[in-house]
Image (cartoon, rainbow, N blue to C red; front, side):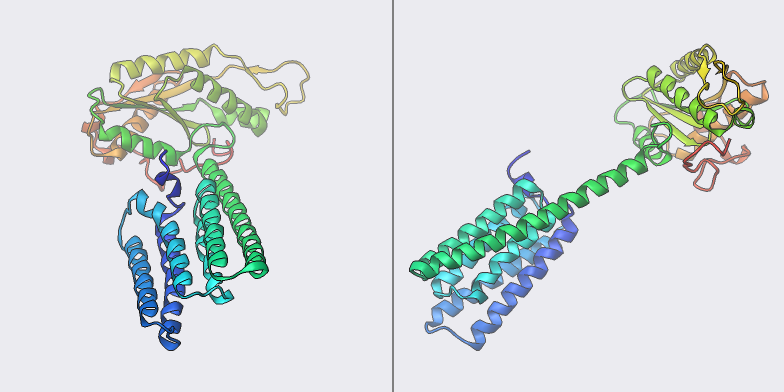
Length: 377
């Protein structure tokens, strides 16, 4: 990360408007008072107004540009501070009305920038205030002004930075909750949809994209006999098996209830079918221990034999229909169940599937919406 990149704000659209508002207030007031109470030398007033207009122009540019370059975000706070110093020095103004504008870059940096950039901006504001105080004032007054304003700037910057970092942590937690199923630790449907779209875009891979759609055979019976905590334990252990069999680039997602999808990007159909067979074998031979979760009242160890039904579908690279891949896998899953469960079925090439012929469509209105428990089973 370059030095300029560190000054990229958390949200560029919001940051642009914040800068524009702060600059408009500071520059507008300065222009109004310069006109209303002109300095003794006309050149000072002209220079002050010109510098304010320059700042306003740059701030307007940050709002107008869709993606301002990193260097522009980086130089703007320092440019604003430099111009504040120049205006105060040429007008010999070290009053409170002049010093208060050194808070504006600190307010912006504390609210919109990360730690390194916010600290650098705050230090630059303090340095600017020191330059004005020492150049315009003298003796003890300069030292007192500098001490009070520097303390206020540092305090304001620290508090705003703390609040911004706290908000960053909260947002990160919310994004994590939206991306990860809390019961199994698998990805959510939202993440899967995004990954499927990315995989179908191709990225030069000619192998295509495969989707394994599976659910636990007679999962409702497990819940009815052993209770939902036991069903949760089965799903958690199943997730561990699937993650253990996954390779780099695979994505395992819980769609809701006991329904799970495995996305295999850059995977031919034949390889996907072999991967599905390995999953079936691994689950068949695993003893699902629900001893601590069963509601049957038995004290001895309780292990369940669990089987899956899996539908396998494949879509060529560059395939246009995300829904057709889901629909083909869904139809194959139903075929596996119709044949007697504990097996896989391979769909026709998903590019050729007429999704209207299937009984369930995997769109947003389906029951595969993300659910927090296994009670859909």
